[in-house]
Length: 352
View (cartoon, rainbow, N blue to C red):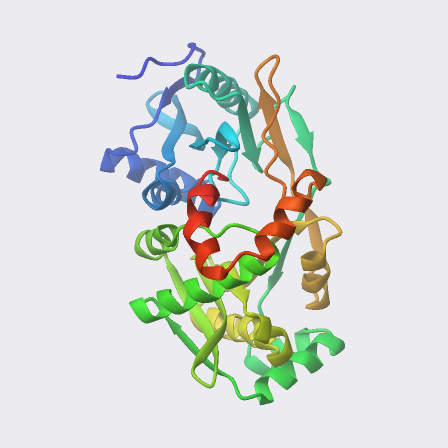
């Protein structure tokens, strides 16, 4: 049994995520508190199943009722080191608590847990920001907007220049398929793996995508050109919002405007599923992907992240835009795709 954390008026303890009633209570708290997809125990379970990185979490209770929650993934990598991350492989998460007492207690418990588990750092991606931590709001931006009421209104909501590209994609020799079966999974992984290799990034293990589709409300939308997949995205659905999460295109996608077709078709598909919002995900501030999302009419909103490090330690550097990675990225882009797909997943599962 895990020892409880230092006692306060708010009780703090590690959650037993293998206990279905406990996980269900936390899921209910996340829903009632308006938490994100990344706060859900199901997200942590998906990450653990897909990457082997340990799912953890700290619960705050008052008089037997959940009063706060901090989802955590213990990420270990021989290359990038150890960290407690909220949440692993997510763009959000962080402390979910209605008041500062619970939030501060969860932050202090995370520091203590990091020391117990030999993790030099704790990373929070959103949520309540604890005092005394290194907080940044200038590195990433998010893009969320409301979906239109019908297909034509959705097209007209796209700014004129980008709308012209979408119209060309609609007139092109492209077809679209949405599904969750083996054919959809294979097509998505082939496209995604080629896309990230072309960007100089190791690909995640396919087991992560399989776990995502099996554990959460998700599907794959793939764009084909003459029966060949050229763009594909795995999207999540949460609380009336669609989140295109892992997507990409082949070299041919740009010429064919397959990405334009993919995202527009996803907007239509999501609205038919009952979604009201489109979350275009995060991008590095001032990056090309951020500019691309602005072209669609999305407005950037700063994302706030925080890091705590043990005295004498420092946070991980997993930022691919850091100058220290430029030579490695250039080398990775030149790798044969088969080799990149073989050696990439063991590296990428340690990014978290």
